[in-house]
Length: 285
Ligand code: AMP
Ligand code: ZN
Ligand code: FE
Ligand code: FE
Image 1 (tube, rainbow, N blue to C red):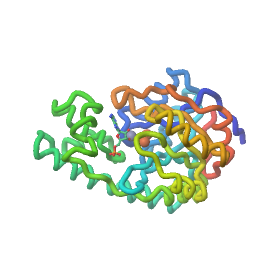
Image 2 (tube, rainbow, N blue to C red):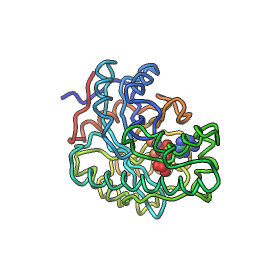
Image 3 (cartoon, rainbow, N blue to C red):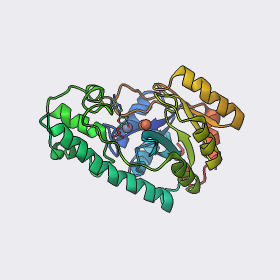
């Protein structure tokens, strides 16, 4: 099988199967308009969008890396682990995603009930913003607040009402990053820590343990990363020969300001991901 995919590549995009505002087919159309040749669909904790994305990529002539952004948690802080080309039927990975998806529903309901003390919002309003059985997240609550006229954008909702330091927030349960990295490796996937140099970085000893667990690399080109954090992580990349990616983290035109192709992944790195993975095949143009 061919391991080199066409450039440019953006390896982190979301659809309505999690908290993006556009269907996989629409995401593929936006990616094509942006001039991308390879994309990865990486919805939170689900592979449900893969088939639609694959069909749309075949039609549009784009290459697709089926992916997932798996939720993890280290000492109460959320950590996102991108999984590329994992076997979607691998039991450990399936169990872990099912657990997180389940927990996210009860957690979102608790946040919504907290918000309902002060704002006109019901749990049904939140469910009305969810497409099918999409992975639920705070963005769906933000969309319900927009529909209720409380805020004008997801950004505004996150800045105050949905902020973790605010009075309504509830964290979600998620496995530790080591468990996630091991499950992705067992599924034949390649794991990459998403936006690893934002506010609050994983401690060095945790990163060393993740590398021992089979961590593939870091998403160093992402708008939320800080320059100092990236410089620090480059030390690990150089010492351990890790993969480096760059991606947009697109959530739809109205979901977030991130735009397809605003960061891209070098062709040699895409090739390394495809060569290292054994759980699923890329969709070739
Ligand atoms: P949750 O997983 O429920 O904690 O929600 C986190 C999700 O909300 C992430 O996937 C982000 O993409 C999204 N998010 C975080 N901050 C913002 C923001 N300021 N505007 C829009 N979406 C955001
Ligand atoms: Zn998201
Ligand atoms: Fe993320
Ligand atoms: Fe993301």
